[in-house]
Image (cartoon, rainbow, N blue to C red; front, side, top):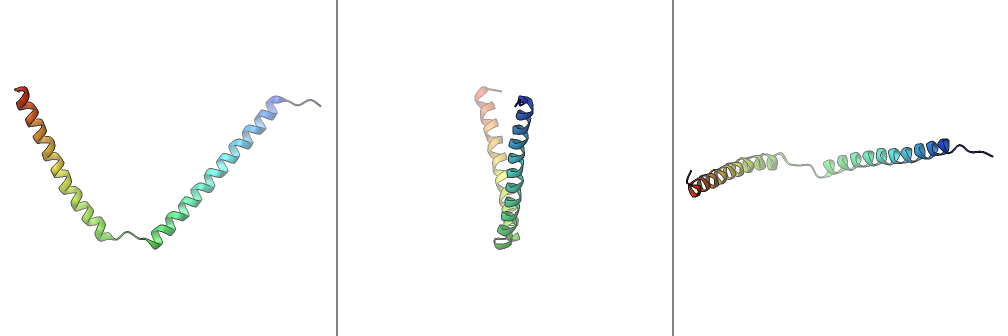
Length: 80
């Protein structure tokens, strides 16, 4: 009984890659369904999203002001 090692290696490769591919597909499907369930029972309210956008704009202005002040301070310290 003679077995071809290349053929056996190819069979194991296909079996292993098929197993990983099948697992990944099942995992993607499960994550998709969990996402649907979470969004159904715990929806995000639109008011919170709008308030968050307003806060982000205020925070961005504070960050820009802090960076500008740091640059001015650095330039004054270097004598530029």
